[in-house]
Image (tube, rainbow, N blue to C red; front, side):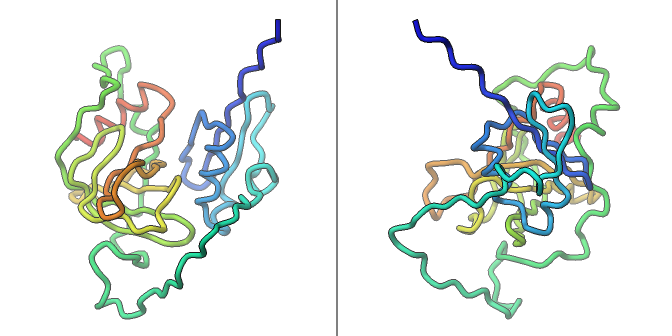
Length: 221
């Protein structure tokens, strides 16, 4: 009888600047998430793997930062970013505007105000809230801005089609229009969407029902 393979060890990432933490990633998921970080922002990230005594700087963990070498049979066509801001379509790549929130709340902060014993936990099939939030997506030094059609603790639908450069894992800021308060989450593009209908993002597993409930309450407040 063949011995059972040991269970996989999961990875955690944390941003030392914002406190944003991504938990329970398989190795390939961790590499995909890191591939979406800009070179400049990688110095802000730390890594922990089950069995390690302490966190390590991401830039010292070669397993995660080595580029993924994949050979494409067909090269993508040339892409030119328009320099004339007036000719950009709504939701195209933008530079950071003055309405970027000064305070980004990590979900752990919202948990401080919750009495967990009294919480009615969100069902795993998340309730969908029809509310307009501003959404900023950061990936590889680029930014895409849109607004939600609906949103839940599990994902969101946007008003605008995602550009092709938004792929894999990306950092997403959900901004309340009324207060400019924001929460940062990690998302991935929902698969099997038509190219012209890429409007849905899935929020990466938050690691616990408490965290999901905290996000749900923040969205509904």
